Image (cartoon, rainbow, N blue to C red; front, side):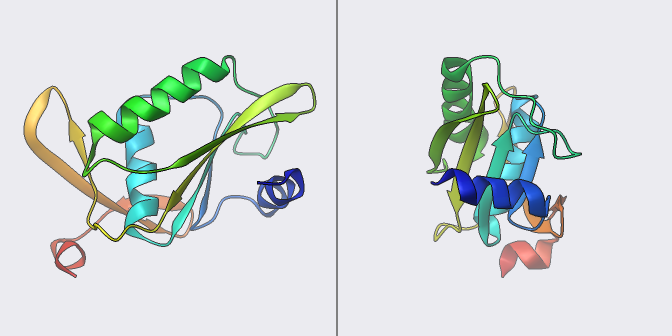
Length: 138
């Protein structure tokens, strides 16, 4: 992934295939966006970018790497495959998680504390929204 591609994504703003996160939040929220990408057209989650497109950076490369792995394995069913890039920007690092459109749809978000409870999400515009039963079936 080239820096110019990332700059173009940041300049264009959030979309069906791009989501910004200032920091790594609750695992369920991250899983929601990542599974929505896998269930739709694929996409990029940029961590360390504010909603106003300001680059704030990530505190720790290792923490982000382990948290993304944990989310994709333990909070996504079936588990997600992804590419993770750490890129320096303006003296800080940002993380880019790329999830391709999946052939194993639908991917659901599961809560390890509540077995048998699953939620399926898709991307609509700039948001990850719950999929209807008909969408899940399709």
